[in-house]
Length: 254
Image (cartoon, rainbow, N blue to C red; front, side, top):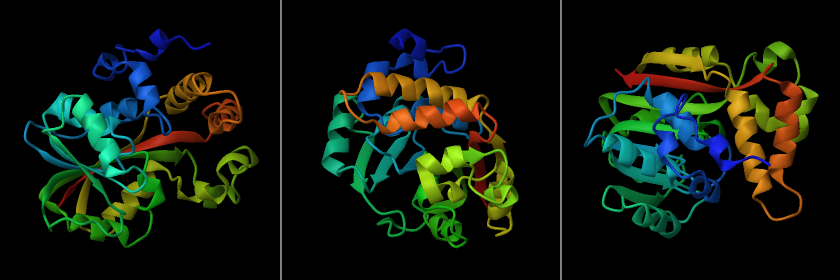
């Protein structure tokens, strides 16, 4: 049994450790989003009053974090979570005056051009951001000099290089793994447009261990029955950090 205390890790994630793991598990939609965001934010410059688009904000934990820890004015945009449900999370967390919930699909964003100082996307960009034309589209909503930060599942080697999706990964995520890329792939994909300057592109240290720890905790707190986390746990345990990780990529709009 994973003790909730094991999920409080001030040595690695001092800001995230201020949050109740039980609260975060209630909002669970994948790997611990605050661990990912806190690490990603080390490569960003977020200040009070920064207007941030949290793209693929899920049930709202990352938007709460951005508002509380950085004083950001956040627009939380997600397609899978109803805006009213997210708004309830923000109100209960005491950031309802800083965070606006919007239900929006990533290819049809309902915002004015150059209306954000930063765009942040945690564990969501792999679903919509790998297409060659997506970065130019997204940058329409970011002011010149604005920042982009993405935390997304990654591979230590490209699927094309491997020649096939490894069986232990294919069993769990199927063809979706072709959207999991190396940091070097992301750097090239963004820089070749000449629209941004990539400021950082790296693998998160021990990302698979964080992912495994959180998945075990989430599974243990689910009702009895089949769990997606169980399959993820088996995948991560077999991989043992050989291929699976998270990429943390940041850039500035030219």
